[in-house]
Image (cartoon, rainbow, N blue to C red; front, side):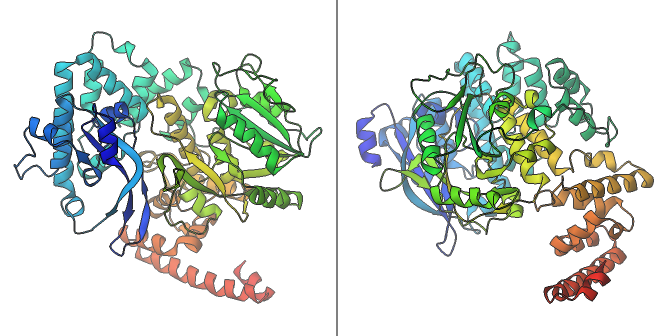
Length: 586
């Protein structure tokens, strides 16, 4: 496959491919998919390994032209080095869509055993490569820097590794290339520069410039949450929002399916057909989520309620939720397909009285193809999907939910400010605030191809929304803030989180447990007084006791173990319906 590709593309000197990760026992861990586009590979190579050595077939002449592999053994990334030198010489690369190897992750291999030194080598190589580009073609270098920063505003997997292994090393050279240009405003707005600085931990001492910029750009709710996060406001001060547009009862159909779109294409047509196949009597409401998206054509789709970009005003989601008349709501986002049996199971569950049902998804990768030329299904083993594991692994998607309409009355998130991130906000509001039932079945989720687009504001919103829900709806500020609180304020904060837990608007899962556990383990006296802490002990006893030992709280650790033993004992009694045991626990 790779030879045929090189024979057909004489402008490409090296071609890699997709690969499967396996462990030392030959068990498949998952698919690692790569971009197939030369332009994207070229850009991403300045940030991480976008071409992987064991997968690669290269032209001998190109390797000889740049002087073969480096023989200096202090360089622990000779593959990344040769690709970077070839690219600096003007050579281009690609990846095929097929899986070409299985790659064993060996704990004794160089990547694991010499991780710090290899990361240091790789970082030096990518800095050298960018410096070469900046010297030979400054405009292209700055555009590359912009593409990388806007597409990966939080950083790439390599940046995360760099931050973990080599604190102090970062992407400063990319920022410098933009900010030292004659007109930095050509690349990002003032707000985007501030968000990027915040992601790089350069604003933690004073976030007020970002707060002011958010307010000035029409994002007061996100500014408010940022102030709460850094202790600039009382943690119990919430931002008032009008949610009346989400309330009310259905006015016609039993079920409404909301179908957001960016443009009219095959994906949209297939989704409309998919809804009709899975639920023939559903009301379909489709709407463009971008102001400049294609307008809907009534000649293309019949019996579909359309909301065009010219009529919905500032909030397409608000318009769609106002128009939808069903007593129950479901969603079908781009690149998702319902499974008829699974959809029937979810819809039946809410018709039988459950407030909310969820169907998990299988992931297929559009840029990786299987033996039949179809999108490759992720072969990674998954745990039994529950509310806890779906939230913990960030696998909840709005299209998985089917729920009663009146659940939206409890949703308090800003419609206008979220914009295209509203579906992300809504799914987390639904998933965190109420128990949901995971029904049998799977949907299909197609992961789009790697692309370069401006995600700075979107990622900031998602990052803040994650913090908002994982910190008990913005109650728990960052560690440096509560670390300085008095004992009375700490107790008040713990009581506030207990009250939220009682309302059902806050869900504890293993992704947010560490933040909350750190609060109780380091600051709260006699934490067993609080319901949220007891729930931590009941679900994650081992992690709780470990945290207490590390803090030197041996007595608290002993009380924790005693409580957990009693909890397990009473739980066994409950299974036999011994009411005396249940009352004893109370």
